[in-house]
Length: 232
Image (cartoon, rainbow, N blue to C red; front, side, top):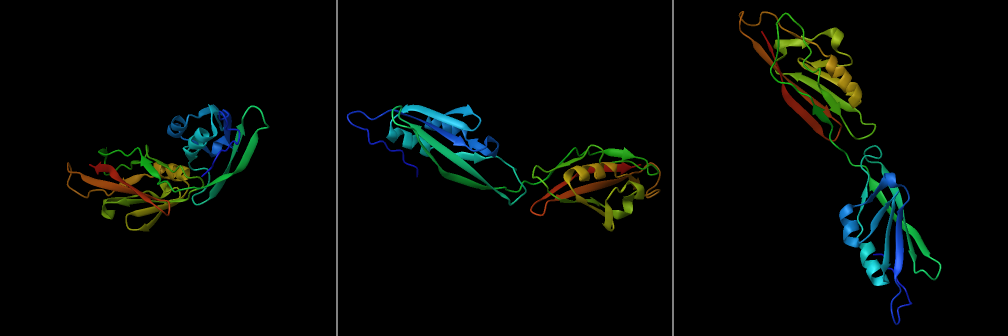
């Protein structure tokens, strides 16, 4: 709704220059598409400029600017206020400045991610193995506490060794839970060592266990169930 006015319009409107400045460039900036549509240039450091336009065209241009807040600047649900200063100069009179425009952005939740899953792993039924050595659990939201669970397709197929739990606890048969940061969860899950149940089937046969990993950030649950290990 901003309007730029200039009473010196007869016989020819003054040509104006303007800058739009964000109080902290780390908080965000105007989108590339809106800058192109408005005719503004990005001068860096949160400063945007336009020149040689009359008041009407400047009003139309500045109204097209779209501010895009930076993602994940604070914990989910927290807010941040950005102050935007507009400075207009007609080259003759002292420049005028307005710094009453503010944008309040609220940090939105992003789901955690699980990567590095590997299917088709094998081990002997008398040999413990680590199915999650390449798993990475991540969350771009600052200060997030995750609840990570590992669920065996059948509890009878085996269990994780006690000395490898690393903060995981068995909350029910075949279900193991960890609560902590994504970094801590990654370290803990990579250390889990699965001991298959011995002699579950005849020699030469195998038992395949599917491991389901869930990561819950209290708003969204991410699931991976592609990890398998065959005990031979």
